[in-house]
Image (cartoon, rainbow, N blue to C red; front, top):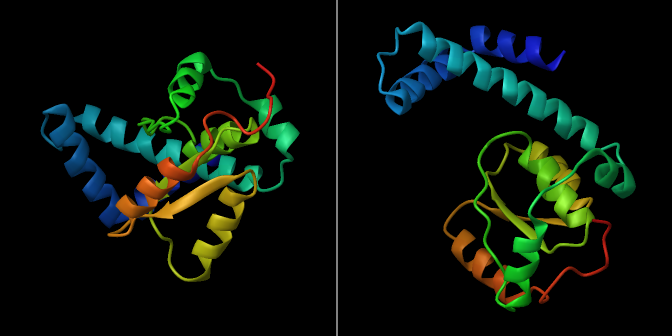
Length: 166
């Protein structure tokens, strides 16, 4: 359902499709009429469809189910950075659902804050509520974001707030 939905969004949203084609053409160093550019743009829309489904599903999951459905490698590096007592900044690619990844980390007891764009109207409240459900603190993108990031780094504990399964 998610992949076909993303494909439909690609074809129905002319303005967003054009923007994606322009952006991927620039990123790939190809002309926007190149079939590879269209393939990559279409796949991006399909991925967003899957992320949307993950997000909807996430709202119905318990903390235990989020932990059970996810895994991560290299957590020792994050633990080592947090032990320094200054917090840590992770730059993560837009591969998969960052909402699920952040909620997974928060469900494991890591202090997680994420900078995110504001959604229109009351949709923003619903999205933030879902993100907060597992302890993911949302810092709204904008002028105040730098202050929010700085405050989050200063106020966080030196390590996870509780033991978590490895």
